[in-house]
Image (cartoon, rainbow, N blue to C red):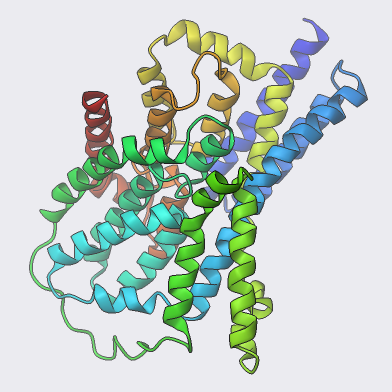
Length: 420
């Protein structure tokens, strides 16, 4: 066996073991961020011990880190903006709007709010916000199981058609595989069909009105300037794609600019309200998400530099020749493992000359990677946070939510194929 082959096998084993630890995070009680960071560094340690020169490896590492840091900065900026809105209780307006008594009506209202909110924010943040809202409105745990599953499905579908709604869609955008207007135009309807198909199924599982809970609306007042902060925060997030088109600068520059505007406004408005200043809000920020992405992307980049993804590309290309089938397989695989490395691998495996900008495969990958994660609770960040917030176990989700999620997944694919 050649020395290079032994290094490739070692790196593949590190990646596989790391991924198994990530998949079974809740069983082994080891945080997936820890595993991802360790996996990313170890893969590069193996690569630096490879036959390449040190200078060549450094060039590859610096080149990849430049791309990775764009995604991390973008995520951090978006998370800070959302945290500022949350600190001002700007989302209380949404709570007031969805405060209805019919379970089925609430399912559809929360579902579509999650869908469109996710397209502006991201599926993880949207799920946190909407699950928190649901917990204040729905007292019965069985009902929360169904509605919470709908939130996961809708949030994932909502992020799939927006360049800023899902990390994987953002990766495809930043990677030069899709353009904002085309992905929004072509994937909006399939994503809506996916959501509606699942909601129709889930609505049959809900019956009767929601019981009134004493004191459920005690905390219904926003902080000073809560509404303007909500509008401004949403506005700067939606302006990011426009900023890129107008200036030609990458999206992370747009998110930095939007954050600076919001930060500037809050500093002027809250000179005597220290708890609402951004410097204090930053202390509440959860950095485990961006650090997890950092570790995963570093590991994928090491696999790419070692040529492992090139070999995998040849194998997949020879085994699966239909680009639609490739996207579907990626979507189904994302129900078991995180969709970020799957999409990162696809970006690396398929050359832009083979599948140019806005090719149907890239659009379908964006949809499948985003919505496929809803099939199992461990398949997406939205599902994992739902599991943590509602203490839902793997098999309860499998019994109640997997089938409607799967039906919605294929309904969206069929819709896109018919449209195209």
